[in-house]
Image 1 (tube, rainbow, N blue to C red):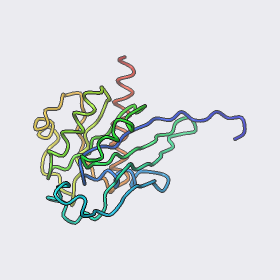
Image 2: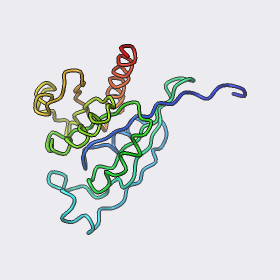
Image 3: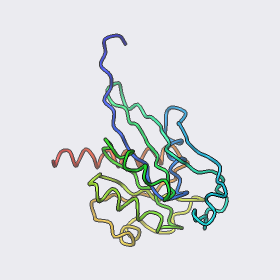
Image 4: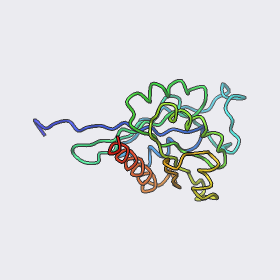
Length: 187
């Protein structure tokens, strides 16, 4: 459309520990083929990357994942999936620049992998929702139990999801957008 304005863009991070499903979430909901920086796991990660509970994992994100969702002709979401391994966390600071909000993806089989992401966004006052990825279709704990175990404030939404399913990932992003809109109205 000649002469039309470029749409506004909103940067959203998809973050969490190693192997929680960030790449899968970005891929399930993106309207474009996502940019992925996955590389095979190598001997460099032996003794460094904890594969307990995710022994079948063969590749990992080494920089970022990128996807896009066009909401309408005026608004586009840019999704940036963060690397999950601690040795790549230095990249989170750069990825967070300009981000309006985040999804912290959790694997209840390994909840300790979520603490760093929660702390990262709390310390930077970046609004976030927690999405509990149900591996094998399983959600063994209700959201309130997860909230209590992670010591999350009541204003942080906790949602059950399946990162493989487009509608589930979409619903998580809608919850984040609702949170951002509510925060903007209060501020």
